Length: 312
Image (cartoon, rainbow, N blue to C red; front, side):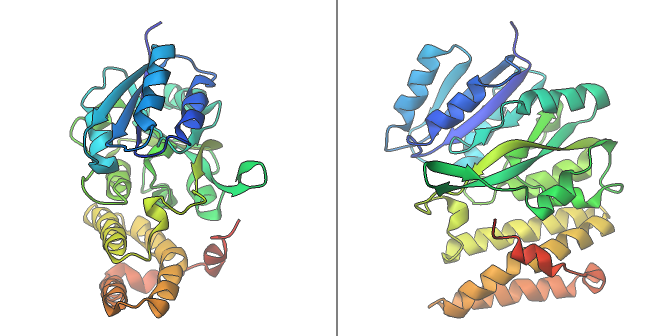
């Protein structure tokens, strides 16, 4: 049975979470997939967990970085080995919903679009393990209702869904597209390029992925109080806006600014108030000044309810 989809599954020091990610692939209702498990220089048992998966299921192949190079490089090494019509991503500490591949493929087969983006939920540790929450308002706005064969001009709110692992693409999308390396938040600029460069894309409201918020706070995206992480975060936001602005997608820029002002900036301001390094506040002030200088800023009407949605 020839695979239709290659899933690129990078991870570093996630031995305790990787079995759930692997099991979520094996539980897919669509079995025609292969997975590239990319160990990004782990010092725990991640490589052994990946090796065990490959030994027991020929659909898995293990790739290994001797030293950590980051998610961008790990995804790129997988993209260089794609030989299937479709490609998707799953971070090795997250999980796919059981029908994710089927839902994605059904949409793309019906529409002929370049890629499809689905909804996702965050999971947090609770009694008895990690528990999924609800679809957050900005995700719902990006993915509901079901839309097939649309463009960014027709659906500017799609730009809120910037994570790599919510999407399945036709392989040709990646012929000249790769992730930035040696930075965090590497998927934001790539996502906006996908939206602006696509002939057409699909969005579906069904949940396709569970994004784990680690209880120990070790995920990069949980470290915004660190100045280098803040710099990467602001650079990703800045770069994504630039992609949309240069593409002439005014409505999409406004939508993105709405979300950044309502949801991204308030928690950063709270961190800045308590941060011991004045460079943190200075970086945030400079970024906000750049936003105010954009011509689209005058049309922004942020929704305060989105900030409250950072909770469950």
